[in-house]
Image (cartoon, rainbow, N blue to C red; front, side, top):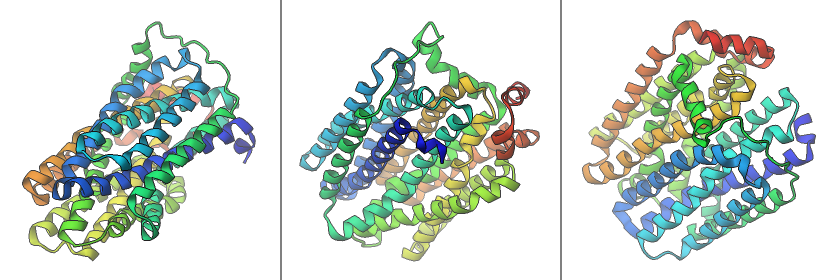
Amino acid sequence: MRLFAIRDYRRLFGAQVIALFGTGLTTVALGLLAYDLAGPRAGVVLSTALTIKMVMYVIIAPLAAAYVDRLPRRTFLFLLDVVRGLVVLALPLVTEVWHIYVLIGLLQASSAAFTPTFQAVIPDIVTDESAYTRALSASQVASTMESLLSPVLAAVALTFLSFDRLFLGTSAGFLVSAVLVLSTRIPDARPSGHTKAWDKAAAGIRTFLGTPRLRGVMALNLVVASAGSIVVVNTVNHVRDELGGSQSDVAWMLAASGTGTLLAALVLPRVLDRIAARAVMLTGAGVLVGGTTAAVTLSATGLLTWTATAGIWTAIGVGMALVITPTGTVIRASVGRNAIPGAFAAQFSLSHLAWLITYPLAGWLGTAAGFTLTWTVLAALATTGAVGALLLWPRHEARDAAPALTRHAPAPHRATLTKAA
C-alpha cells in the first residue's frame, strides 16, 4: 500500500496504534484495579474514572485542535507519550481511590491532546489527496480495532499475569510510541485561518449542527454510548459478583463484545458497497436497542446467565461496529477536504460527550439501584437516540453517504453534497 511507503507516516501511525492499544489495555486493567480497591463499589470507581476521561476529551480535544498549529508538534506528541507512560507506571502503586482519579485525569488529558495533534500532522506528511483520505480511514480503523482487540489481548495476558503487570506492559508501549514519534520528521505547522482559537475548535461542531446527516450521527453517538456503557462499566461487577467469575473471566466477557465487533467489521466492507451507510447505521442502532432491552429483560427475570450475557455482549459489539465503522465515510461525504480535520475533531468530542452522560449512569445508578433499573434507563436513552437519528437523518440523504460516491467523487461533487445537506 502506497500510504505505508511514506516513512514518516508509517512511524507516526505505528506510534498511534501502540498508544491506542496501551490505552485499551489500561482500561481493562483499571476495571480490575477498581474492583481490587472497592469491591462491590467498583462500578462507581470505574464510572467516575471514565467520566473524568470523557470530561478531559470533551474539553481538551477541541482546545488542542485549536492551538496545535502554535506548538512544536513532534516535541508535544513525544511529551504526551512520556507523560502517559509514567502515569500508567504509577497506577499499580495506588492505595486510595482518589489516587486513581488524579492519575486518570493526567492520563486522559494527555490522550485527549494526542489525537487532534496526530490528525493535524497527517495532511503535512501525506500530501496526496487520495492518500490523505486513506490515512484518515486507517486512523479510524485503528481506533476501532483497538476497542475490539484490547479485551482479547488482556484476556490472554491475564491467563498468565496479574492485572498489575498489564500496567507495566502498557507503560512500556507508550515509551515505544514516544521513540517512534521522536524518529518522525514532522514539518512546522502552518498558521490557521481562524483569528480566534475557539473559532477553529467550534467550526466542526457548527458543521455537525448544520448538516442533517451529521445530526443523525450525533443521535447515534448516544445509542452507542448507552449500550457500550453497560459493557464497559458493568461487566466487572456483573461477572465477579453475580456470575462468580475471575479476573480473566471479566476480560473474556469484554472480549465477547469485541468478537461481535470483529465479525461485523469483516463483513461490513462488502455490505457497504451495496447498502447506504444510513441503512447500515440505523440497523446497528436497532441491534443496540435490542441488546439493551434483552439485558433488561433477562436481568429482571434472573436469567442473565453466562451464555445469555455473552450473547448480548456479542450483539452489542455487532451493533457498535455497524454504527461506528461507516461514520468516517459519512463525515467525509459531508464536508470539503479542508474541513475534514475539524469535522473529525468535532465527532471525537461529540461522541465522547455522549459517553460523559452514560458512564456516570451505568456506574453510579448501577451501584445505588441495581442493574435492572440502570439498564432500563440506558435502554430508554438508546431508543431515544435511535428514533432521533431516524428523524434527523432524512432518507433522501442516504445516497450522499454511500462509500462508492465518497471514494470516487471529485472534490466539486463532494462540495455539492455538502451544500445540498
